[in-house]
Image 1 (spheres, rainbow, N blue to C red):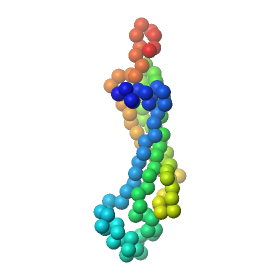
Image 2: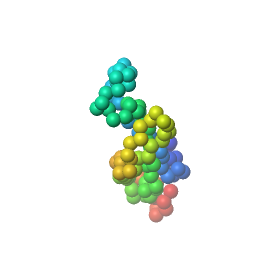
Image 3: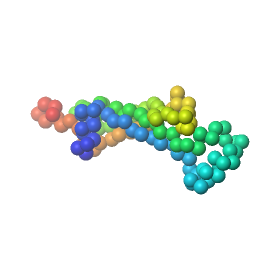
Image 4: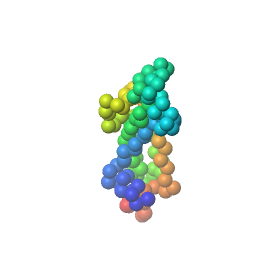
Length: 112
């Protein structure tokens, strides 16, 4: 909880990393790379894609809020010649963050 509070107050959020990887085993992937099936548009589509998004915690910096719902756009990181380039123009991930009580305490009218 201490790390989460530090992210919420100091950093105002954090980067979340999402990895899209093929569901096949390494052996199946090696066979597919050698065979180059026609149904596969690009052989690089067999490689994992690393994406990230910024999750903003600034809404939790109040004495009333205990929940935040965000729709965060994904951006690809570590692009190489071997990595696929998915179209992420309209790709989002939805996060709901809920804490049991507000991060800021309200005692005697003073917010701490």
